[in-house]
Structures are given as structure tokens and as C-alpha cells.
Image 1 (cartoon, helix red, strand yellow):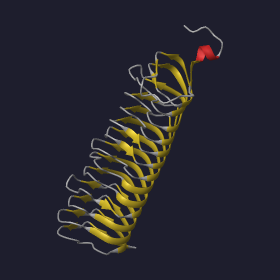
Image 2 (spheres, helix red, strand yellow; image 1 turned 180 degrees about the vertical axis):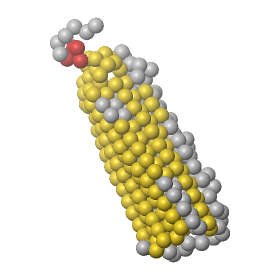
Image 3 (cartoon, helix red, strand yellow; image 1 turned 60 degrees about the horizontal axis):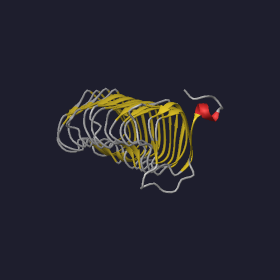
Image 4 (cartoon, one colour; image 1 turned 90 degrees about the horizontal axis):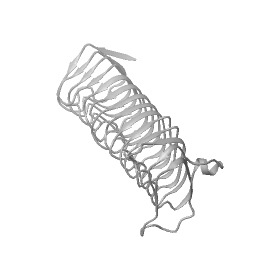
Length: 288
């Protein structure tokens, strides 16, 4: 493998078409498409300031690198990439890709990031600000996620998330085959219009959670007291620890909680076969 170290580049396409090359302590200052149509590239301890610096690269290892705000849309159409211990301040990263591994990566402008990416494996990922991360992506595994970006995980398939803290507007919309473990999700309208969604040992806050869901499972979960009008037009199997403030218009399944404050079936409700009960009543105990 060739090595290029301690170099600074500007202008257009300064490293176009290189292959089997390790880049150490380089700086891409300005211009466009610094690294493009390349193969088998390692890059360590480098900084990127210009636009579109990493397009159409097959086989990448990026470590200890920094991408400045001006490096917008920096990594697109690049397959088989691993990034570790790096910081991204630019928006619209990671588009149209296959095979992306991230370890200890912080994205400070997560606007429109991870679009149409197939095969994401991330550990200790931090997303800040922006909208619609992970839209139209698939085969996603994340362990350790902290995000305050809005509208995270929309139109996704085959998603598994562990140990997440998500503060958002909406999340997991129009998704299919999602499992989330040991996480906190604070946001309105979680998992609307989705299919095959399972939450295990999770806590939720937000309005009108879990509506229009086909095959929703909640195992050993808790829900904030301010959350209401949940499960409308959904098929659900829910085991809730603590109380539910309001259940509204579920279609089928079984909902059990320690305490259920209100059950609403209004004029918009479809016929239901859903069983709704308090745990103490189910166990033959007297409810407080």
C-alpha cells in the first residue's frame, strides 16, 4: 500500500482515481471532490474542508478524521466503509451506500444523513440537530445511540437498536421490521404507519404514540403520564409496567398495564377485538 502523508490539497479532484493508498495527516482545503473514484483507501488523522470530498470510493477505512461544515454531502456512493473516532460538522453525509460501519462517531449536523444506505452497523453514535437521519435505509444495527435530530428512522427496514436515548419529533415512521431494546424515546407520534415493530425494556414520552401500526409489540415498557391517545387503529400486544393515561381506538390484540386511566372508542373507531385490562384485575387482585 502506498502512503501519502503531511500533504495539503485544494482545487478539484486532487486525488482522483488513486487506489491501495494510505493517507496520513492530509488536509483537503477547498474545491470539490478531493477523493473520487478511488479504491482501497485508508485515511488517518486528516481534515476535510471542501465540498464532496469522498465520492465513489470502494473500500475505505477512516480513523481520527474531522469533516468541517463546508464539507457538506461529503461521503456518497461509497461502499464497504469503516469510520472510527471521527467528528463530522457537515450535513448530508452518507448517501446511496452499501456496507457502512461506524465506531465512536459524532455528527454535529445530522441533517439528511444516512439516506438510502443498506447495511449500517454503528456503535457509540451521536447525532445532533438536523432532520430525517436514516431515511430509506435498511439492515441497520445500532448499539449506543444518542440523538436529538428530528424525524429519525423513517421509511426504514430491518432495524435493530440497543441502548438509545432519542429526543425527537417523530421516529420510526413507515418502518418495517424494527426491534428496539433498553432505550428511551421522547417524541410525538412514535412508530406511526409501521409494521412489525417491537420494543423491549423501553421508556416512552410523547403524544399519540403507536398509531396505525400493524403488529406492534411492547414488552416490559413504561410510558410517561403525559402521553395519551395511544394505539389508535393499531394491532398491539402490550405489557406496560406502571400506568397508561389513555388508550384510544385499538383494533386488535391485548393491552395490559398496572393501571389504565381512560379507554376511548369514538366515532372514528373501527370494530375491535382488543382486550384491555389492568394487571391487578387480570391477576384476581383488588385494584388500588
